[in-house]
Image (cartoon, one colour):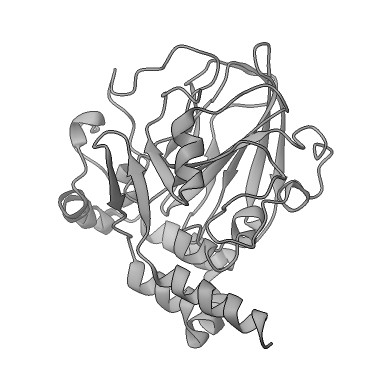
Length: 308
């Protein structure tokens, strides 16, 4: 590849090596993400040798299952206190089981304490703590971790009958870092009308990886949960697996009625994300989500905050 192709690759490599920055409305500052396992991620996704290792082992399910099993072992509880200390996690937001956490996964999918995440007024709220990227109109060209990559519903929803449901609608990518609270919640009130398992590999969904290829986000193992909302129409809610995510656990079934902000499930160890899809004309995302995206940044927000 020469000419413009070489320039594109050079730009991509420089972009992938940049620090990961996001807008934090709670501090009113642009902050730099402290990436868990950053050295490993940069080796795996930014070096030739690492990409060989990635294809041979990391993206495959048995690696993540093994690591998830490891985080279920009693000895892994020794990692909890250093993790809390090193990443400054505010434990008053969470409940600690009587007798303490049994293992690292027990801590990783910890539950919120009562009242720590008030649910906002309005019809749609953030489904998770994390760094969020708003997509005002799916299919319109916009920044998605690296210029030149497109958010393609055809890839994300491959094998389903819902492609036209959310075409030209709005979307929200909510990326959960390993340091975040790892339970996810209903963005709207309504009835769960379908749950579809979509198989795929288990690449990382850190921007370090997504700057190389946005399709890691769209093709990883995932579940499509369809919520029929009287207020917001048909909403697609998609938990996406990633490297070292042992499993996606759903707490609701088809036919269940859910309330906005109600827990829908959790991820076991590893950072991952959820994608929320709205039909065309059903929502106009709040300015902070759009403005941050236009500045090529995500915005940090907590579960239960309004999306409008």
